[in-house]
Amino acid sequence: AESAPEPPAGLRFDMVAPNTEDKVITPEGYENDVVIRWGDPVVDGAPEWTIDGQTPEDAEKQFGFNCDFAALLPIEGSDKRFLLVSNHEYTTPQQMFPGYDADNPSEDHVKIEWANHGLSIVEVEGNDSDGRLKPVMGEYNRRITATTEFRVTGPAAGSDLLKTSEDESGTKVLGTLNNCAGSVTPWGTILSGEENVDQYFAGGDRVPDDEDRERFARYGMEDDETARKWERFDKRFDISEEPNEAHRFNWVVEIDPWDPKSTPVKHTALGRFKHEAAAIHVADDGTIVAYSGDDSRFEYIYKFVSSKKVVEGDDADARRENMKALDEGVLYVATFEGNSDDFEENTLPEDGAFDGTGRWSKLATCKADGSVESHVDGMSGEEVLVFTRFAADEAGATKMDRPEDVEAHPETGKVYAALTNNEYRGAGRPGKDDEPAMEYAPVKENKNGYVLEMDDDTAGEEFTWNLLLVCGDPESAETYFGGFDKSSVSPISCPDNLAFDSFGNLWVSTDGNALESNDGLFAVSLEGDTRGLTKQFLTVPVGAETCGPVVTESRVIVNVQHPGEDDEATVETGTSHWPEGGDSLARPSTVVAWRSDGGSIGE
Ligand code: FEO
Ligand code: CA
Ligand code: CA
Ligand code: CA
Image (cartoon, rainbow, N blue to C red; front, side):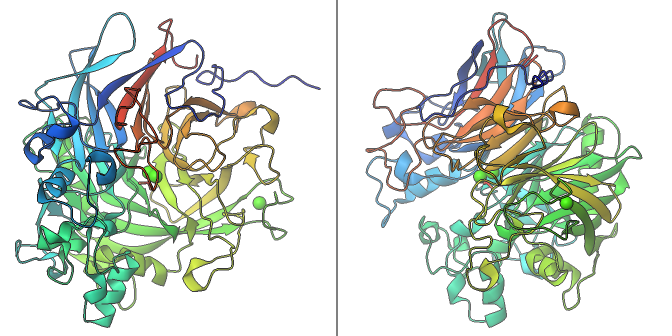
């Protein structure tokens, strides 16, 4: 037999084997260390965190809970200092507070939860001897929480659908919630997606009007009370009291991390759904495109094409100008079609690829004067932006298996989407909870997910696509690794976040591994005779998902989210004790990995 091709630069490391250890494991010849933990000081005056000493005031100054997206931005004029930007997706009070009573949370507990949402911006500093990074009190350090003021931009700003008793302008929102993944824009700002915000809003089932109630239900807001019970402490979380507050979440937010006094914005032109994230691609002619996935079963992939061209640079002027680019342009949703008539579930088609063509359907055109034109019968432009899921239904968009991170390759411009899993696919459930296996979603009761590759002509309305990976155990017949020899790849399950290294490889982090191993981070070759080669670079502790990730020449950064998460786990019975070990409480934390000999990652 021919010997396997050499891995390309970026993938030259010994793969980490699947495991269930309560630690971060990196390849032989690599080391890793915690950068910052939940509760560590972020802004001036923050005290050291103690489990019994938590207060709402202190939590607003400390690193929030459940770090998800991470960015590492070099600070000009220093080769050792960076801005670490981190999302804090959600709180798990049972794992934060000793003796937490889920039936009767205290006001302090709820306010500490609010402070633990949002984002942290914190300077980190390296040293001369290894890859370690430590937080420092820098001029950019900032916490953004569930009560920080945001400005609403784009055509739905000021809409009647966004006005509340506290904000008759419909343009000022307190806070951001459930910030899942995100991206760094070419102009140096941060985009972050407000994902599963339904869990914060009660009373959706008490809305009297049938059509309104259906609208809330389509966004998952159909419960009398929430498990968190925040509605007891602020009526804005009760839809029956304050019906429009919920419409002020589920957006893409943009933050200028270089101006700690700046008011972050919510971009209505990108539509309202369970945004995993949004990522920008700038075409050669300066056209700005934002891609975004709606992470629920049988939801859609969207793109927004700005009518403004990029302003080159990442200085303050460029940032200010480019932050307006996501307010005018066209919002589209994707339709996929396979090209193999012989397609059968769980089987590679005869043409040797899960592939085909696609089309972008126009939903709304957002204009320079702040108005919006609808392309959907029976919906106004503002309705298309606020109730985007209905607009996409109407447009006949293709129901996907939980679109998570969608990112464009910085050199090739090809667009990659993590489709994490969907056990309902082809499972014979009633009504909207079932769709058959299709060439773009070939596995019945899909437990392990896919990585989709799209060749999109940016501002155009057509694209081609193929599945780069059909994830799972490579020994299972239905898996597919870009055509690469499956005997030499790592098992991979539930892709969630995507990044690229400086060699052009794709890096994929996972959440929800269905193969009886902890979650991890994988490098995937995209080109040449190693296309599809997939190698596990690290695993995270028990119960955690792997987030971030950031891959630079000399470092890999991941956020270790929800270590020890388990339906039963409490502070008292935690299933993880990472990072401190012993019988300590698990703490979501940012981790950095580097090569012991100081060399480039994977080279
Ligand atoms: Fe928050 Fe879609 O993962
Ligand atoms: Ca095909
Ligand atoms: Ca995610
Ligand atoms: Ca996830």
